[in-house]
Image 1 (cartoon, rainbow, N blue to C red):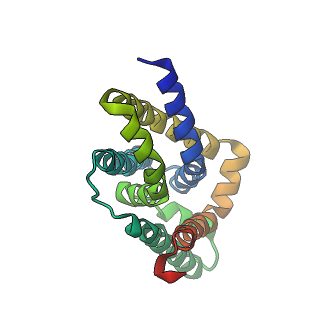
Image 2: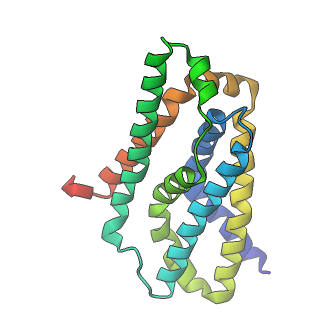
Length: 201
């Protein structure tokens, strides 16, 4: 394997996915103490990133499954999930008379499909960066990029889990996670929609 390509792949992944660590930490924080939740988040992250890779590789070969004009509308996915999480947080808060601990105990964390949807939508703009790189790397180089990216997804998941389990961060996520997660998802959704000019914005 060419060490230069591996280095480039690591750099490209880190630059285009740095915000995913925050989202993963929020997901891990939300699902703390729930059995099997780590596996669900990791599966969801891999599903979402595999979809990004598949679309980017297909586009590098000339197939356009996802028109460029459709990418901004991916922002609707995290926006919808953020609004859903905000509604659940408000409903739990109202039902429990503000008892956040009981509300948190009932929530089992995000499903793999929810994590995958957020990962794919948040990485939709990455496709535009990956396509020219993959197209010029050739099949061998593209394979190296894909392998390195998939290994780094596991490292990103570990980093997200690490941050979510640090005492200070874990305490903050336990107290504010039910507010932060919907806020971050809604913000990501709106930024994707606005930056991409969706709906003529």
